[in-house]
Amino acid sequence: MTDSEQLAERCYGGLLVDKHVKYIKNLDKRHDEIEYWMSEHLRISGIYWGLVSLHLLGKQDALDRQGVIEYVLKCQNSDGGFGGHTGHDSHLLYTMSAVQILVMCDALDKVSAASVISYVIGLQDPVTGDVSGDSWGEKDTRFAFISLAILSFFDAVDRINVDGVVSYVRRSMNYDGGFGSGPGGESHSAQIFTCLAALAIAGRLDLVDRERLSRWLSERQLKSGGLNGRPQKLEDVCYSWWVLSSLQILGRVHWIERDRLCEFILSAQDADVGGIADRPGDVADVYHTCFGIAGLSLAGFDKYPLVEVDPVYCMPVSVIEKAGLRSWVDRLPKSWKD
Image (cartoon, rainbow, N blue to C red; front, side):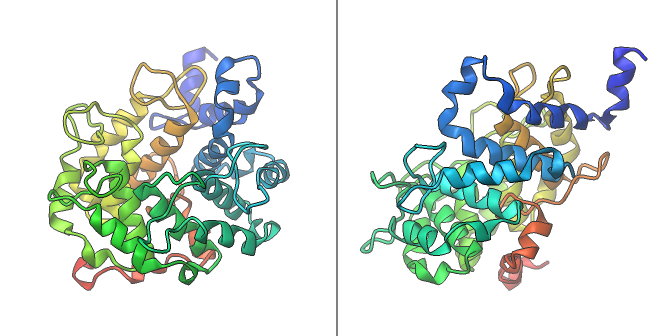
């Protein structure tokens, strides 16, 4: 069998499933590459991105579950939060990845819920309700979402000042219906996702200008079929997730030409070693691999049986249902259920 025939055999409507599985499995074996050591601070997030990709491909058993759990637990610090790698300072971003990994590995009971909850609520400003990403005080609408998401896994959302978090998100809304990284920040697709997801968990999506925001998001599609994060920027595979997840929450994912988007994502695959890049011709990485595959799932790619992804938590719907967290769908504004 020729190389091209072997490639075709592993190709599912253009999706190189076997290549991507192999690529993800080999990520922790590339110790001779400088990129491996330069990305040490992202190690735990890298595991999350890889695990989500494998779950959506139906190949979650490709990684050593016990090894993953043991590594994640070693990343927890005395303050209850998790660092991006063992010995690294705690940050809300990496704490979120750690919790998501443990949930997908059905091992959340391996960590002290009280310690994680205490860490998260300790990052909220008791006066303004804003949430910081770490003890140094970095503030961003990402952390509004992440704080609520982490607490929801422990059934502890009521332990934080939800009204304060919602107020911060609301103050970050712009005239175009979008959201920025904070009050006064430019609307950006990724920040829009975090704000919508936060409001979904809080049950306050009624605050969103659905029509205006849906139009802004649908205008992110370019001639290539790919999506960009804001006007006048290049398309990027990761926005296949940030834009589509937001439109899915809004019930407007059909406002995007999904077939063209799928073609763009598939064109950014590395046919030699696997993985997906930000755009065709660039080097693949696990971040874009994750959000490219998640984008295909949201877009309804039907040439391979991708697992359905939840647009709020970026994890398989089956996992979120098992955790009892799909109730955000039941709390959608009545006028949206059309």
